[in-house]
Image: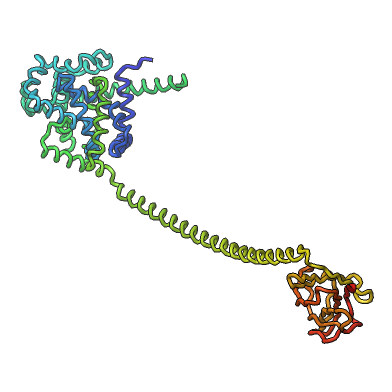
Length: 215
Length: 269
């Protein structure tokens, strides 16, 4: 049975969004459990690689950063503080810092702005989405976002622009970046909530079918 | 500050996106610690971005995980600080191991000590048995030497037996013999069957040469082992014709025999 990607992601997310499971994963990581790293990779590598590729167009270099990131996450798992936020947020921070270091050391920073900087903001978002947009679910979600909302999330989240860089790029006052980010995230959360309702229905339907078929 | 307003300001989004400086981050964390609704809002933003990131996921090139695992494996022994920090329970584990090792050592020592004591007891037992066997062996060897000497004496063709038979009135079934060997100058008494003497009495051996009066050959007790030879004094007359007799006399014997108490006598000759 074909399950749309968005459904799979949300199903997967529903499974892992549980803080208890996340804490368990962190404990395994800290204990240097051999399988925990593979598990972590299976769950997060593609999402982190998507974020890296938003900053670094070179796949080989992106791969190096991803490797560095997982090694560092594995080494510093005990420094992750669950009271301050989710595991994935921390992993993104670690990954992003390494990507920036890599860009700086290779003097990619200036290249990035010309390399990755799209002619129009709408193109910017499509850069990292061009392959994934084939997925109907993702396209449906992204299409529900206004251009200005989509672009600000893309610039801040995937391309690691600073507030100042965003204000320059989008030609909006610095103070507006904050409020527009809020509006964009509210919209995104609303869309995901709606999708989530559909997803939870899909999950229970899938589970029912699985159960019925004896899988 | 009004919490709702604070939440709506967008600062929490920028916090999650990592766009705040250290001071601003600390301020948000303080607010989150003080107001649960701020914490909840941050978590919701994080979840939304996590799903969004998963939507934009790109599968890394093949073999990336393998390379990561290799690098981590190489780091493992070369990073004692990291591993030390990762195992806060290791000192306790170490103590448990030390105590366990000590217990095992004590048990092994007790076992060894007990085993040693048992072994020593066994050795002592074996030694005692060996000693007793050696003693009985010595005794048997001495007996054997005596038996061989007797056998040699009896086999000697110069040895002549003089048989005494029981008198009909006293001991008709009794039988005894004196073996004499004039060449060796030795004589042995062999009492085969005599009734035990009454208390205060002893058997006395006599020798009669020719027509002389019986001569005293001394008193004797019945041998503890029947058939055991008892050496008696040899006289040169034994080479000729002699008669031996045994009477039951008062203990210690008498110079002349009481012939009413004659128990054994050999045929003259």
